[in-house]
Length: 187
Image (cartoon, rainbow, N blue to C red; front, side):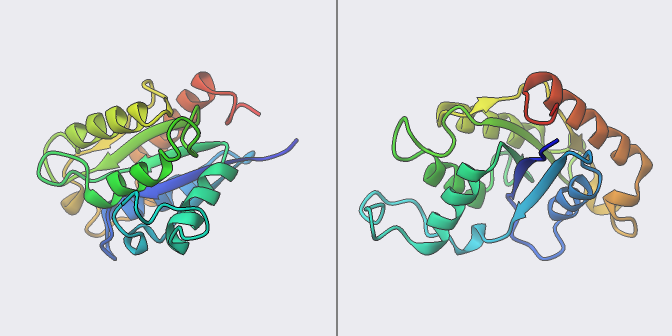
């Protein structure tokens, strides 16, 4: 049985990001037949500009992101909430992956959105905005996949999400929903 690959993009660039920790927990708790790869260079990708998106001149970090997304069977976007919406780093990644228009690495790619936030709703506004942006960019948004962890800064102050039994159970639910929505994790 071959493994499927899920590329995780974390919208927070902070070293101690609770969303980075959530992505790590997802990676550790993925089903045996799924490899979760956390892409770690969103902060190195220049803001999307069509003038630099020219064959042979695409910045290396953007080209690496496109290659990783193209190689993946599905994407998992892990987002905090910045001022009630999607962080710029994640939106920029979506912009790079949406090009060339109609044939970008996102086109038809099964994509789920999860995340944590300090607020009481766990970043649901950012997750909704991310689903909207990635859907417009051409991805197959897995609307049934939900995981929003509220109060994350306090909740994960002394406990990594991989060690939080409730989060581990919710991660299993995420992979079950991905498997139901997409053949990726069902392999």
